[in-house]
Image (cartoon, rainbow over all chains, first blue to last red; front, top):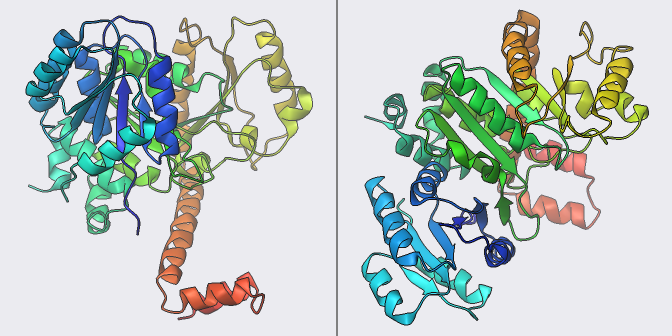
Length: 134
Length: 302
């Protein structure tokens, strides 16, 4: 039997209204064989963590272009840990300065995908890094 | 403590983990089934089906709000289609329901259909049993956007609501066999659009002429506007009222027969595919040495 598909929640935290990138990624990961739960725009870290908990996802992908990433991403990581999901891979995409990437990784964000990253690269990263306990 | 007693605690995490094992067909679920069903509290299982874009998710969202006002804990399983090519899926029903994400008395889970064509996944009935054991009532099952014949939901749900948009087509659509035939309640959604009342009248007129299944009254046809919650109180009332009807002996045994037939087919298929001569038999059918029915008979007779 083949492995069950990887489940990923894609969300747009905060207040920017540009979700084209998130939708393109959702579609691309669908074609890579992922089950993609898309939650839409203007989500709070609490809503994202609550959804991830109910959906029991392997990955939470956060698309953010507003500049509020230092406030919203570490908070989402913390809320997932609080809900007993420390193994969920949290990845971010969007416009995030290199200096912030270091800090985000220290805060528990697994990877940050900047402009120009291909969907194939992202899919490969998730396949290699998703941890599933038996 | 085991997976079933954990559900009684009301925590989301044990339920979410169990649902994953159910969806994945994990071998550890099978021995739990009798206990899972025994732990069920008899929740009202309500199917929400209808064509893509008719507003099923938005209507489910409005129904959640209404049932929360009535103090009910609501469970939702929302099914979207899996790609037959890559097995991937976009599960987008949550977009319309995020306002309830933080409510501890609402549990919503997206499911991919994973190869099933009837509008729900093969494991949806077990997932519904898990929500029941966890104390959610009602349990809403939103199917994939259904065309005319994805009627599998009617075998599982006690009450099936078919959601149509006002521009569903002419009167002949209303007398075709299939989806409308299994409706216990019809909601003409997007009631703020021109033509909604006319569509509802047409449906009522056409459905009153014949009963579909024997001894069945025509289903009530209601007009709703999910975005403003117009008509949603009446719809929730109608669903609640249908509950006792759905629990009549006749309706219950009809549902049981359908469910056992379905389980039989699944069981036969899984045993046959595990037979040692499965591959050889397939080869014989591919080479046209054997017809598919004879092949199936031989596999089952092992």
